[in-house]
Length: 417
Ligand code: AMP
Ligand code: GLY
Image 1 (cartoon, rainbow, N blue to C red):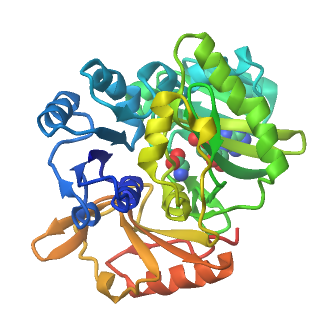
Image 2: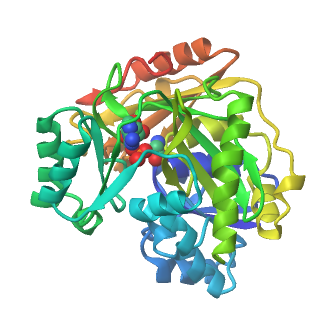
C-alpha cells in the first residue's frame, strides 16, 4: 500500500513515524515533509495548499491513502476534491471541517444542538465588541472567527487586554480575513483537557486523553501558542467524564452533522474546560492536535490503516483500540521570540547525542547543506515513553538539554503545571 502524508510539522512527522511501522505500507510519501520525515519517507516538494498538484501526484503515484495533517487544507476542501477524483483521503470534508474553520459556525452549531459551551455573541467591529464586554463584565475571551494557528484567542482580564486584542484584530488586521468577525465569550475557570476521537460519521472511538500546555511561559503565563508540550494519558479526564463528554458533546456533533447531510469522518478534537458546572467546550478541531499527536500516537498500538478503513466503511464501533501502557510526555523546543517574531536558520546541534529512549519529532526544521537548521516557531518535539509520567518527564528533559541552537526556548514545567 502507498500512503501520502500531507504536511510538514511535528504532528505530520508523528503520523509518518506511526505509519512507517505499518506492515501494510510498502511506500510512504510526505508532502512537503521535513528533515525528520525525510529519514522515514520520501518527501515530495508540494505545499499543503497546492491541492491540484497533490491530486496529480496521488493519481500518478497510485497512492492508496492520503492522510491530511493540518487544518487549512481540510477547511479548503482537500478531502472533497480527492474523493471527487476517486482518491481515498483521511479527514473530514469541507462542510464538517467548518467546526474548526469558523468559530462562529462552531458556536452556532453548539447552540443549535445544546452542546455545553460558554455564552457568546458575535461582532464585526471594535466598538460593538467593547460595549458588549463593558455590559457583560470582565474577564471575557475574544476570538478571531477564522483559522489563526492557535494565536487568535485573547483571554482578557483587563481593559488593556481588551484594547490590545481589538488592536491586533481590527486595527493591525493581524489575522486578515480570519479576523473580520470575532466572538466574545465568557471566560471559564477550570482545568483544560483535550479529548480526541476517531469518528466514522456515526460512531466515535475515543483516543487516550492528553493534556496540552498552550501558553508560552512556565506556570501557564504569557500569550497562547500552538502548544508547548503535552502528556498522555491525563487523569483529569476520568472514564466517567469521558463518557459524559461523548454523551453531551461528541455524539450530538456526529448526529447533528449527519442530520445536516454532512457526516463527520475523521478526527474530532474537543478542547474542554472542566468547570464546576461540568465539561464545557472551548473549541473543536478537526484533526490531530499538535503536539497532542506526539504523545498519543506513540502509545497507540493499532494500525492507522485499519482505522482509516473502518472509518470509510462506518465500522469503527467494531475496532477496539490497543494502547501501550507506558505514559508519554513531549517537550516542545521553540525559537526564541515565538509566538512573536523569531529568527530562522540557526544551526541545531546535539540531535545525534540523544538516546533511543526518546523520539525527536521535527517541526520547524530545514536541511541546510550538512546541517539541520531552525525554520519555524516550534522547532522540535521531544517525546519520551516510560512507566510513569515522572520518568517520561525526566527522560524527555535529559534529551532536551543535549539539543541546542542560538535562542532555543522550552518550558521547564511540562507535566507539572
Ligand atoms: P481555543 O483555540 O478556542 O481553544 O482557545 C485557546 C486557548 O484559550 C484555550 O486552550 C484556553 O486556554 C483559552 N480559552 C479559550 N476560550 C476560553 C474561555 N472561554 N475561557 C477561558 N479560557 C479560554
Ligand atoms: N495543540 C493544540 C492544537 O493542535 O490545536
